[in-house]
Length: 109
Image (tube, rainbow, N blue to C red; front, side, top):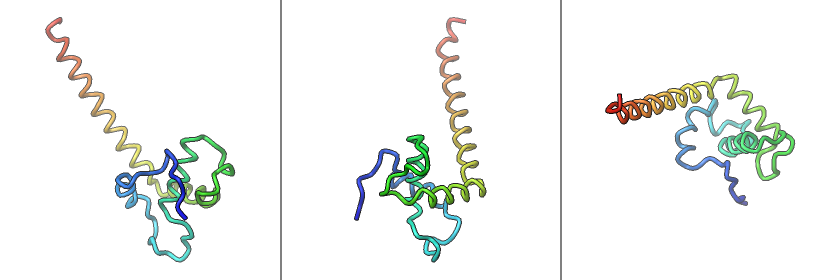
């Protein structure tokens, strides 16, 4: 049974980008009871809503599964590289905006 997607669900393109960073073991591993993308969607739902773990909707993986996997990802540092990448991306954007601003007012100075 498919569920109606939440606004916080990861899109296909984003999933293709992040999946290699989040896979800490084989996708077919026998201990994996829930699809990794569904677990990520559960984590994104928690982050987006700010709800308590135990309030996770029943159509997402169980809260304790999402929580345990999030702890594994944090321990492995998978989010640290993303934060650094985003910070560098934002810094480059800020420098570009500053350069554009300086160029636009150069004739005044």
